[in-house]
Image (cartoon, rainbow, N blue to C red; front, side):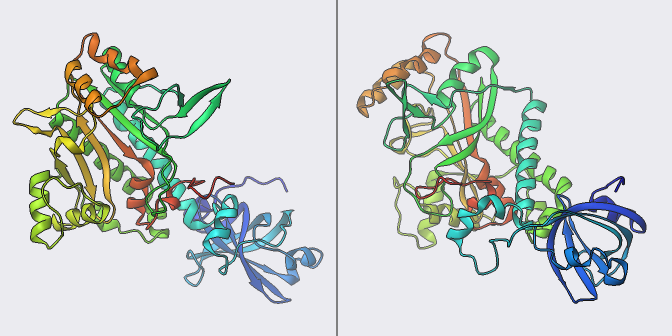
Length: 430
């Protein structure tokens, strides 16, 4: 069959006439006289009608079609409101490429079995739409950074010491020595900026957390940004610009996928800069007024973070200047109140923390003092402090979890639906 094949999407754009399409059987039904095959490719699905009278010699193989069999089809396309996507192809030529075995996914398969068959579940319309939106999110972040004049620089996925210490690290053998999977690109980035000033990376980060919540995985893709000469206000502006740019890009490129997922498109259209900015102190006061059992100095739980976004117009909200005792040794001090830091969390409605960032502490002596107080020995990561020894400048940075952002856009209730092969404490296959 020497035909010029086009995508199902392009066939539907054509609307009438002879078309040649190919793909996989998404659904099939019929009788011994007529077969209805819903064909899918990477762009869409379309109903195809095959009559036995037109395919007497091929009817046995047509009648034996199973879900995910691959085929090539030539036929007349026309509008039909009864069809799943409003178009139907009356098939004139048919070629079976591969007859699939019984497909091991159906409506009765539970979540655990779907995990075992993740490589096949990715073929579902939901997961295909999700992966396309994820791709747009990644592209848009790269685009935004390049538009702002940033340089993309990667860091190793393994290092000789954990970036921030603690037990939430994966230890691996490295030629008879211990190495650790990276938790963050930040230590490298704070040195990068003395060369390129504005740096970013999109790469996997690893957290050995035994969390089973819908919003945690042990390997996630991390968008991280570091900017020389930037204060906290500038850091938030950059994060805000990235969020808005991505959402605009998804609305432009992925309306079909958003509709497949039944995502809240109006919610996305409402996202506008600038986002609301409140202090940690104000956030605690709001929570107390709303009946939450919390006091000044406490850290937020995820439920409280989700509530805060809801209380402030059910929109993105920056919470700034947390107490220093809740922050890491590299967070800067608030010059107006040294008991608080120059940091922020960007909270998203329905999810909570989306972005974590801060203006970093530029003073080497203060960092060393904090490390001693916290009994943290950087050990093999002591090189990190060279960023404060040789030409230290004011600088800021932040990190965003790709899966959380993509899940929020899609309206998912778990980030596992926003990553091809999620890794959790109980799953590392397939």
